[in-house]
Image (cartoon, rainbow, N blue to C red; front, side, top):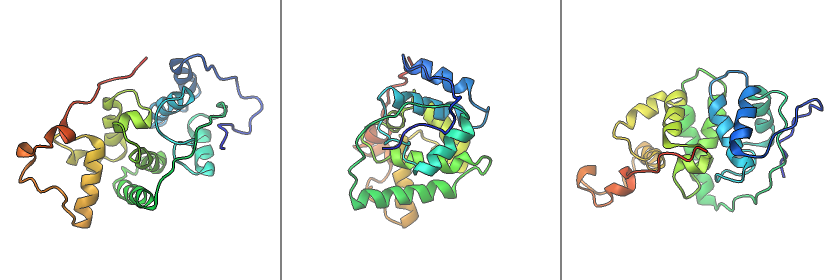
Length: 204
């Protein structure tokens, strides 16, 4: 089990009364870096028991500690317990392919883009809308994450396809595998699965 604890005995206590309180606490102690807000949402959601990401947001323990130290120095988060995901080999291979795809499309403006790529790929392994699985508060927050961290890739989603569907479509095109046989999206009977509405917000 990975505790959300940095080796800083002087770290202030964390308010755990609500997701919003945790979110505000993290932002107060953030460094004003790209992805501070995004990561604060994810962490606040997970502390509250939401989202689908494993402990550590899908990062290795050392990477997660580095993320906390860079974005929220001095913050101590409570130990979060949830069972590790039971992913089979196929899902693990998909995750690695998604990480490679996202890494190749990074904006290369901030070091956190690598972490965000791993986190997004991990979220794709779950079953709900990607923004919900990541612990974000709206689909708009996910779209902003994609534009900020992977702008060239995000620009390809010019028809507002659901992000998880879009990322898997990019993998298929990369490998030259086209699983969809519809002549165009407009006439496909599964159009609502790829382009249908997603709930706009879970903000408190």
